[in-house]
Length: 206
Image 1 (cartoon, rainbow, N blue to C red):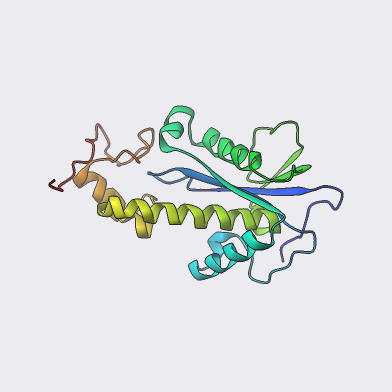
Image 2 (cartoon, rainbow, N blue to C red):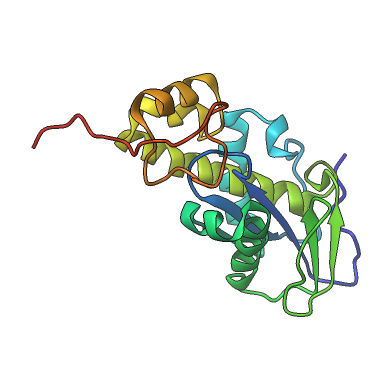
């Protein structure tokens, strides 16, 4: 069972990211402040939920949270500052947009860069331990999946509607056949035998 809070004394915001291991697209992060009495029997680490459950929870969280925000760091920024720093930056940007200033940050994972002097706790597998982190994981995941489906309409060859930019066989086959798009993370190893990859060449005619 998920814990409702780390400490009753503070206004807590749970933070989590989605898309860190992807080969393409932005990394997303969410920050969520839940009411102290928030309850939901389904809420869990987003990876443990079905797509339908995540969609249902997104509606509930966005309606019932005291405050929530989802922000991104682009693939070009990721290439400049690396994915770890980009994940922290995305969380910082999400915290920036909360309507209420948290007094304690609960971070999924084991590392974080301090935000504006607010105390934080890094919690390994925190999205399976605390409600606010689980809620953040659901929002980050659902917002990112929606974004990747929109990109799929532009670049269907990579099957981003199903792999969401992760390094699946279909995704890598698309890279090998068509090259890379402006959304690919060029600092990542996109193919096992990667040397130099061409940019995507559209087959559309005007």
